[in-house]
Length: 375
Image (tube, rainbow, N blue to C red; front, side, top):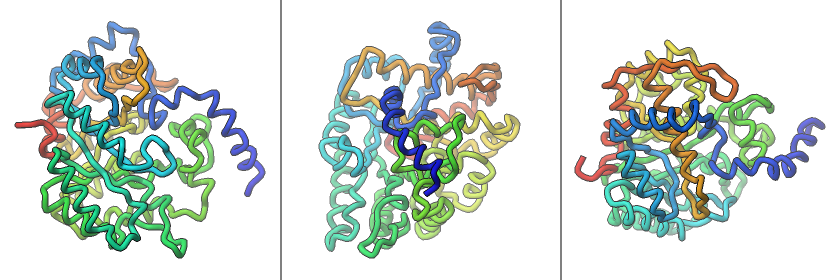
C-alpha cells in the first residue's frame, strides 16, 4: 500500500471525531446545505415546493414525532421510507427493529408515508433463502409496502464462500425480482457508488467527507473489490432479464457525473428510472444547458429524492436539514437564480412547470404505484 494512503487512513479516526456533522446524513452531498439568504428565503422556496404536492422518493425515517408529522402536512409532502440491511451499521444490522419502527411512522402519518421494504442479502447462500425472502417481502406488501430496496453491499461487500463477490444479477436474487414484478411493485436499486469511490482522494470532491468517515466503502483503498462498470453491468443485466420489473436507480443510478450515461440506459431500458437522492449537486456541476435538455427530454424518467434521515435521536434542529435541502433543490430546479453552493457558483435551471410537476410528484406516482393512496 502506498505510504500516502496509509497516512490517509491513519487520519480517519481523528477526522471522524471532528466531523460529527456527517452523522446527520448518510452522505455529505445529500445536503451540502447552504441556507439560501436566511429563513425568509427558505420559506419562499418551500412555498413553491409545497405547491406541487411534492413526493420525496428516498428517505429513511424511524421516529414517530409530532414535528415531523406537522412538516409533512404543512409542505403537502409524501415520502417513501426506505429500509436497508447493513451488517456494518448497528442501527440497521437486521430487518428488525427498523421495519417495525418504519411501519409505526407509516401508521402515525396516514397518507403521507409509504414503506419500501428490503431483504437480508447476507443470507443468499441459505438453502431456504428464496422461499423465506419471498414470503417476507410478500408479507410486507400485505402490510402496505410499495417497493423493495437492494443496496450497495451487493456487489461491493458480500462474498461467496470461495471469496467471489456476489453481484446484483446473481441467480439467487432472480426469483425475488420476478416476485416483485408479479406483484406490480418497484425495485429501488442503490448499486455501486459515485466515480470518486474508485478514485484517489480529492479534498474538494463532493464525496471526500463521506469516504473519510466510511473508509470501508472507499473502493480506492480496496483494489481487489469489483470495479464500478462491472456492478452497473450486472444492474443492467437485471433489467434485460426482467423487462416487466420497474426499477428506480437510486442516486441517479450511480451515473452521477454525466447525464449522457443515464440517457443511454433510458433509451435501452424502458423499465428504468432514476431518483435524484443525494446527487443534485452533481447536476449543478454539469453544463446547465445539457442538464436542462436531459431533464426535458426524459421528464418522465427522473424522480425527486433526497436520502434525508429522521432517526431515533431527534434534536430541535433535526428538521432544519430537511427544510433547507428542499429549498435548495427547488431553487435549483425551478428558478434561474444564481447562488453560491459550498463555494461553487450555481445557476438554477428554471424548468417548465409541467416538468417540475413530473419530477416532484407525477413520476413518483407512476414509478412507485401506491406511494400516494388513491393517486
